[in-house]
Length: 224
Image (tube, rainbow, N blue to C red; front, top):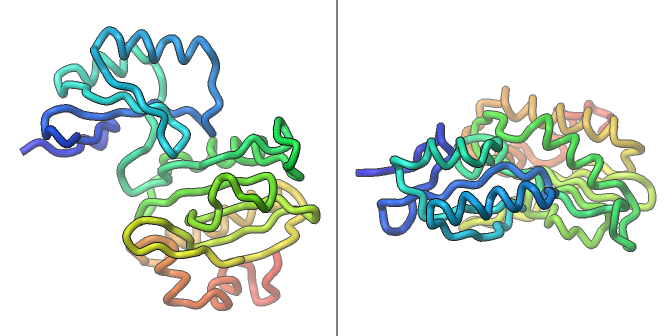
């Protein structure tokens, strides 16, 4: 019986014959040349195209024997829609474009994406980076959510959607700059990797309690 093919980023579809793939488009930011190439490949192989909630472009209906050829023609990095890894780093336009933003979520989000996208972990992880508290990247239901405020950055941990949804909890507030955010996220990820927890990050936060988790990640003072 056919199944997902992790090394090719291919998800078996409902027909149990064809696959969906998704090139990596960091934060959903792309250019017209890339879009044209995706369209050309879709036309060549008769594929359906869908914008996904992870800010990627999914190509549906790929035959197994054509997976290598499709990826070669795309000539793009694979997204990470499956597997035990950082699946996505969702990013809002932030102060680059949005009139409501108060922090540069695009700059921070792209840095995080370059570090963590597809990183192997004990379970899947999703991140959301928003430039204001409207949270268009849905930070409260991400394993790690980072929101811009007038005083800096707020970091939330342990959120997820799915069949057992969980709202993330505030780990720390008023983080002054992007470098400090990067340091705290690194601490969270490294602690999770070494914890022995096989479930989502929220399970670890639940087991420990947010205060103990905060102390383990940030130290007894609870600050970076």
